[in-house]
Amino acid sequence: MNEELAITVGAAARAARVRLGLTQADVAERVGIAMEVYSRMERGKVLPSVTTLRRLCQVLRIGADTLLGLEVEGLDAPLEEGVAEPAPGEDPPRLRRLVRALRALDPPQLKAVSQVVHGALGLLRR
Image 1 (cartoon, rainbow, N blue to C red):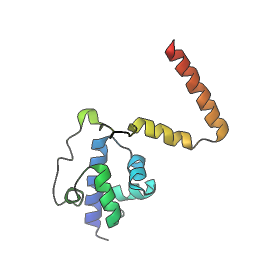
Image 2: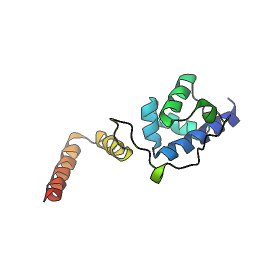
Image 3: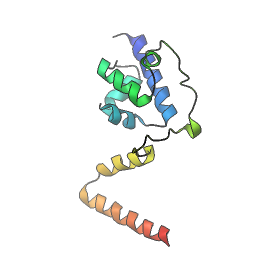
């Protein structure tokens, strides 16, 4: 493996992810890889396959030249307030993180959280 290239790809991926206001878990889920694999990729420990590289470019909204370090495309420029607008029909990052956390709960825990949320919503409507 070319370590310099892996570090370049990882740094570009991280910069693009941060610019979009996404978590590593968000990107991994959208790309279709394990979060641990994506984390290793960002740290320059592994290079993506060609298929994964293509999906990374789509998800991170950057060109392959930028991801491979052949061209710099303004990765340091933050988007408005550091958070990208979700694509039409897509949930915002905060909601996706909440859903991921809820999926990890067992049924009694989920029921308890649901009761708390419904109670809080009732208070907000007053």
